[in-house]
Length: 492
Length: 143
Image (cartoon, rainbow over all chains, first blue to last red; front, side):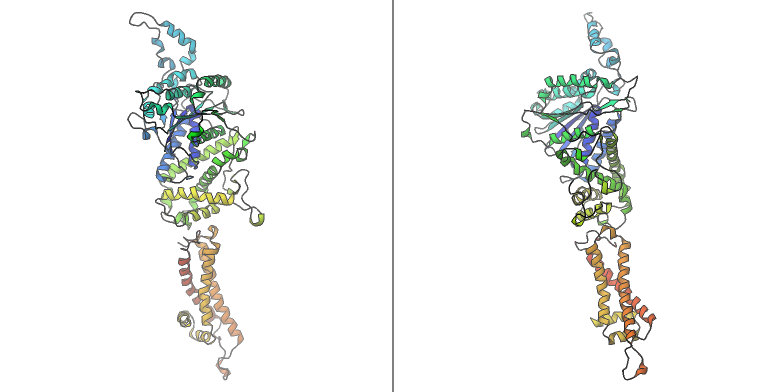
């Protein structure tokens, strides 16, 4: 099966990658790719969004390595690998993030050796006009921008610095190991610095792969490439010292879209557009604390574009209309599944409801049932106290699930809000807008409880062998919750 | 079968009372009660209710207690009813007294004994039924 290389550029790239990881953890299915390889491109190493995404990806991998899911719909079914794991060759760091060189503690002025531009060459000729050209293209403030906090909304800086990607070991190994059926997806925002600059450069380098530089350049030149370009969906709080001004977001977007229409759109097989007019302002904090934005519905919707791209068969990339937009049914400040299209709901609804139930069960119910008589817990290999205190459960799974719940909570309080679940102990009202199935003859409303979850899990696990405690736990919920959902929420 | 029940009853029931039970042909029905009550209740617990809400050890013990009480009560009240009938032990000799004239204490201790004996079939039926496919929620109860 083929790989999907995902280039997640900038802060938005990290956050969309996080959303995709959550969807994949919940068992959302990718049809035409068997594994994905995220490559996060962000010079801002202290960016907390990047750190959070890396932590989540690391936990995903730890969990999946123990679980080894085999069936469609299993939690963590899609394998997520680091570039180092899929390429042959040395020189790749063991991380999901691409390591940009020359950006740490360095100003843009230093990066381009600005001070030497006016120096005399060996023949005594001066090149001062080069400095003049640079001064024409960049303001003094931009030249003095310290790049370890990113390109802070300056795509003209990013377009220079990110060109190093082409000559990096990471790109060389990626290109040389790219298979005939592999695909590429690029996530970027259009209104910032890193993403807006990185997307065209990356695309140019992939489509312009040259023989002699990489093996099988035709694989890259002919690769199916998808991209999502995220238009403004958040703003920044007013701040005297800020280097990014939300007032420029729309003008930057307009300019970039015009450029894309001429030089980019034709090079991608599918280009997804997304943005929102309802926006909330985040605190601007590019320093050591890093930019940390609350998760946003737009990022989750953007992640569904990757699922759509992966699930599109090769024959459907016909070179015609390649643009796609994401639509909601109702223009409301707070969305739930009823406001999404049936197609989106079908792809992510049940999976997210199952994973949310799983998280809530582990948080509120499992502990009191360890050592009891529930067959799905007690059958060999039994889930015992030592298991739930072990590293798999405590360090990886609970940490991942906490990130998942945080992700839902953040989306729920953002603007525009996406609040599809009530995250309490009452499963009856788990899915916003959904009532559990009525009782006999339509009389009364039945409840949905953790006991109902146990019944579904007991039924699924009855008589089935499981090689390990990790597999028992995750398989039971992955498949057992199908029964719970269909019996309690048959109309969902 | 009757001999089997007699041998069990003889462990717990006063000899005179057991004689009366044999004489009135009550050993077989009370013996079957000692088997059928645990069977019915274990089937109810494992196959019919088979619910997570009632699958804990305390629920199993409660069902066991109910089975015990049914067996005890059936023995006790059967004996009491027979005593109330005032059947002459020897119709031609009134001084020989009545059947089941041993008194409540004997009835109760006999019932307790037979009830205790019913724990064994209850346990055996539990072990059999919990491994059958229908007991999805109770197959690890009591252990």
